[in-house]
Image (cartoon, rainbow, N blue to C red; front, side, top):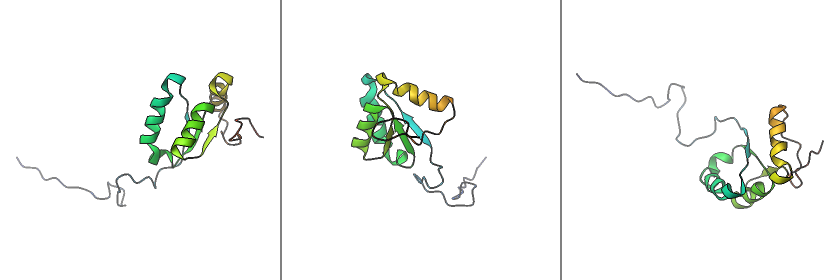
Length: 112
C-alpha cells in the first residue's frame, strides 16, 4: 500500500501561510498578574513570547507591570499593586465585562 503526501501551501485558506506570522490575529487584552514568588517566571515567559505579546494590549498589576514595561519595552497599562487592590480591579473589570481602557497608566486609577 502506498500513500502520497501532499501539502497545501495555503492551509485550506486560499492564502499563503507564513510561520510565525501574526497578521491575521485580532489584538486581545491580556492581563498579566504574578505573585511575588513567581514574577521572575512570568518575566521569563513574557520575554520568550515578546513577539506575540507585542501585538496585544497588555495589562498588569503595579509591580509586575512596571517590570514588564521596563524589561520588554512594551506599553503596559497598570492597575494598583496586588496588595493594594490591583488583583480585585482586574477581576472586577473582567467580571463586569468592562473594557479595561481608561485606566491611567501611571497610577492604575480609573480615569473616567
